[in-house]
Image 1 (cartoon, rainbow, N blue to C red):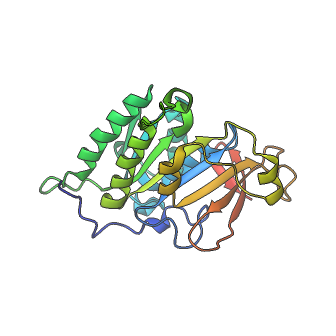
Image 2 (image 1 turned 90 degrees about the horizontal axis):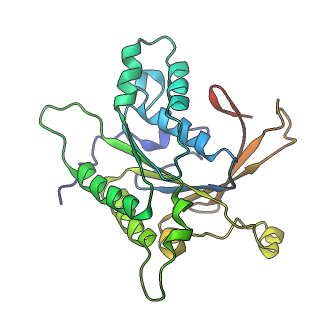
Length: 261
């Protein structure tokens, strides 16, 4: 398989220096954003997508991003509004340039997700055309990976489609050096033992996904934080990372997107 050259890629650790610890994410990182519905995960996704596709002069990476929408909640107009506000002084042409760097695919079934990932793997691996100035793909977002949890329970001794998807995602992250971000929803309440130890929610998607994730953030509501201007305050806490890193952010959601406190 032809591999996209890794040299010349922009440092992905500058994707968002406020939301991630210093030096993260790294090329090839697989990041899980986990939490209950309505805890701000997709809003963080909007922010990261905008940072990826915005031109360098507007504070972005100037790279391409791919979004796979599995739970059908993604709001393109919301993202467009955020891009417009971040490039107020730029012409409409600049906004079109940002959107041309974003590819979106909707997946209604877990089988469709698998086929889409296989097709993307081939496309991303293709070398750029001679003379082309099209940016590299730096970010792959899978919004709602847990949407197919109930329909993808394998029979004893068989492999789930999600496990096969993990194999494809692992190859793409490892071989292409892109950053993979997936949102997963908390479908069950944490057990009392976990809560008493302060441990994060138990992963739902099996050993293959658990082994693939290099960074994991747990989202939740964080009401009563000093400096909050609204009761709708959220938090994201690093639950899994290299070394013994403690990292936590509180934020509110405004028209401009995620605003850190």
